[in-house]
Image 1 (cartoon, rainbow, N blue to C red):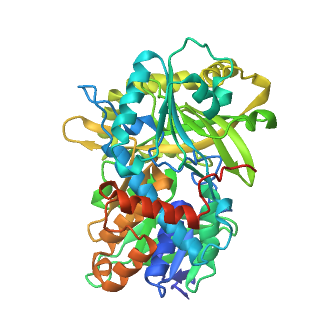
Image 2: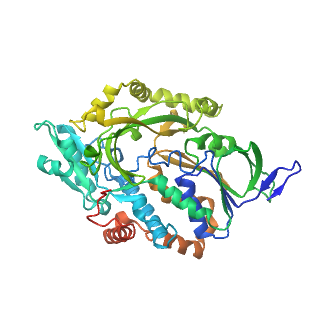
Image 3: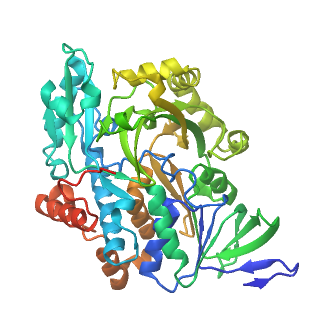
Length: 511
């Protein structure tokens, strides 16, 4: 580090990661494994890491593997079920498991795997003749893929009562019901996992993590031989400013990524906007009720609701304790982060994204109405929604918990002007020197596959070298192969990661 003409500190790392969440932690860890000599600086606006979208209370923690999320398997006009997206997401999650197994097996993560991942069955649950027929077709379609071998289906109420006694208690015996179950499902505490990775990263040579530091400006030098990014950062604790010059920048700041992408001025970021959606959980406070449920049970989303609002009754492991959540209940705020500013949305609007945002808003009026309805819900309304899944639920056994903030992507569209996307999107500059991650689901669960793609985009020559190829293969043994097309490989990989991560059959979360 040196000082500029005004005596301000200037550092020159190879890589700057903005945001200390699961995305930056994953990319930072991968880069240090691939290129140990890299210097990396991580900047986080808050006073602790993994405090926004990666935190356990802010993240669904399902380990999104498409086992139970019905929105990943849409029904075609002819009535058949499209499992292509589910296949992709399931494969991505298997890559994440392989990378985590690599970290555990090599002693890079020193804590027991059960501190961040636990075996919890994933279930889909529906009622009504039409929905039962849909789930049956979904089961038949999904079990043609190696990634969903082992899935069980039942309409038998005795079997359903064994799988989910809390949900079946007090239910109308004449109501048509169906459920699928995957024993291989997991619960992941991404906040805990992020903290483990960042702790080990910080201990590595050439890595520094700065908390209470806010990035305010990014500008790329335009000299032919120098394309480094000039970054301004404010130390919020000391009220001091510093300058950084970095060869590569990754913006992984959750909802805060969009303003920074727009501030970078890269053409690839023009026209992007964001639509913030907040969430809340009902958290069970009665240990006797919590003990009666051991699964993640997902239902069908209401018409017009965003994917993050798919209702589920969710067994979690948070800070070593078993928890039970229901929700999430969606809401609207102009904040892009849970600890953000109400001016985040208005300040993100500019001449490039105004038309796409207006067009997307006009095209999603049902979503707007849905969010308004969610905001206006009373405590009684929330308990009534809960009783669709837990008929015997008592209001006194549940309390409201504020969940995380998500910013859905709005981008230009030639025909519609602008469209609202519910997935995750990486925006990269043409020269590959800066990348920003936008969006929400499936997010954290697929961080590893997202970062592998980013490496290929931003470090194309490096990823072609035998050294990087071999290391990526070591971190992700199925790299370059398709688990969806190879049943034997899929089973071998799943058995391997289950062994290393202590997710063997019969090991259910009990704490």
